[in-house]
Image (cartoon, rainbow, N blue to C red):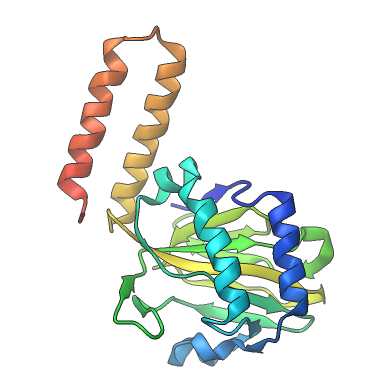
Length: 227
């Protein structure tokens, strides 16, 4: 399931992130790439665990905790600390699949990468190219969102970042270990959750149908969740 999540960060928070990134020192993005990905990766990153990455990462994680659509769509169990990248003109990231397991640097903690997330931090008019292209059942999905908006998609997907031809593409990226590792099951739970919310708005308060469907939702979650 590919899901657009609007306004995870406010316009002010996205601008703050850009200001921090404008003053930061950058390193080669291949520092956090696996063997296969490193061969097709050409971008820059904030140093993992550096002051800027930690500061911005805390802001992103705080915003995720308050975002109901993110929680409903991803059902997060663990979130890998956000990383931050920059693509200048000519930079790209070829087709690749994310590593199945990521270890948090400097710790013994591991995250199974069920879901990938890209949080856009530059406005679309500030750069050309740089679309995130995700291959799924229905073909290629091309994603380029306003600053502060994010897209989540199965980490099993082959994906790439198209070459930037003008300006700089700025983004946060990270992975989530979901309570429900199967993407098909997560998609069913998400659709059921959204339908229940719509019914609550359409039916009188106390109507039995939303209550019973909520029971179905939680019983399915009990069957499928790792937590």
